[in-house]
Image (cartoon, rainbow, N blue to C red; front, side, top):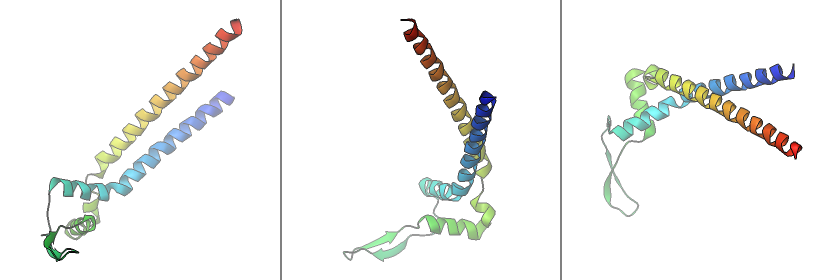
Length: 123
């Protein structure tokens, strides 16, 4: 009975891990999307002139929140979450594979420890 309880606990932990991974991916998606827009070079807002601390004239590029507000005003809230489905599926797949491999490695470690104990008991 204890073995099935342990397996149920492991299964619940795996489901919780997958759920947390998927929800964190969904929550952080707008930040990741705007980060990629900046990296790609999408510039919806022109740089604004400003003076540095030493008085030098320079241009200031828009930041993360400026990009997010442009997307929000253009496409609405759904625009901020465009492309979230593949990222969630990727996170779920990644978490599932990670949990499965972790269980396999732990079961092999337990088996190796049991074999070592038996070996030392013999001598």
